[in-house]
Length: 419
Image 1 (spheres, helix red, strand yellow):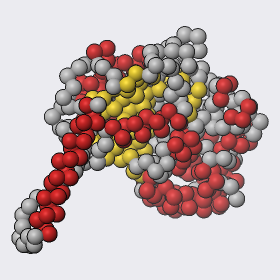
Image 2: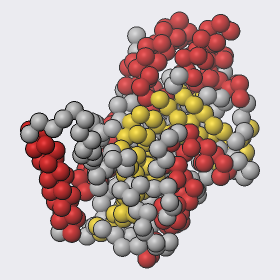
Image 3: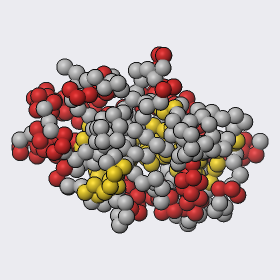
Image 4: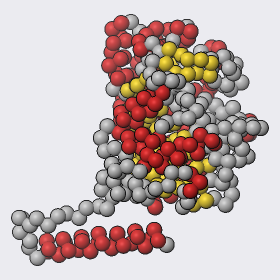
């Protein structure tokens, strides 16, 4: 009731001000009239939504990150109408928190949810994500919006969860989030659960426009994912590689996410700086407005170099996830630049670099820490644009995860690969 009353008071105030201005105009106010225009109460405000699918091994990290967010939101740079709205599904009931610059709590346990779900839900479903976004836009409107997608992830590849691969869903690609449905963390299959298909994410959020979507999750900066989500945000920010389990340092990143200028660059540099001297990190941003032109360009590249790409020696390319090193339910995640270095001549590559630089901007620490294979991986700048791509090699043809068949269902493959 309080929120509805507040909104009605704001609405009534705006209506009255509008009536005054309109009445003045009706009675022939002069052109020199300096009556200020009616300004939206949400001018220059931003609402950032954080969707945390943490009913998995990352549950303890979720608590830490929310507490970092609380500290980061308490700064003088925020607009009075800026809001951080957090959806958290960990080992407790899912709940929603709202934070602004006046929030003084620093511990998650001291924060009072605005909604606590009575029953557990599958937060790795696109429908649940869509319901959260609808709720936020209805109750916490703003001039602009950002979205943080926080969880485990696996790019565009098929789900490794049997429950997602049975019956009619057996051919669906799954990529983001793990919800084990058991309210447990690491023991007894903490990371064995439902995952969200990227195409479903794009469908349920169709018509939404975010300033940015930031994936605080592993291997989400693939050209297949970016192209699927191209209509949802101005920029997609993610890593093509694995990220450290603690994720972003939200104490500093809150300031970046609510900045009025250079928000994308500031998010990337704040994230990379946190791990520059430890684990290392690769983070990049994709300008979605040029992706369709880029697909047209890449279609011509594939048409002329399909055979060279199919015969590529992947061992000579910067690879963010090695097929068969840990398990066969991940294919190779090859950096696009490393691939193009191998298949294009010097003149073609120079033009490809010009076109790709319009699409993706990368920041990296010179290395990243990988579990597959385990250890630090050094980055060769010449091989790195910060965006991975899939090539349907023959070695995947008979894989039980049907990588090649699933790839051909992606919007990117339909745009550039299918003849």
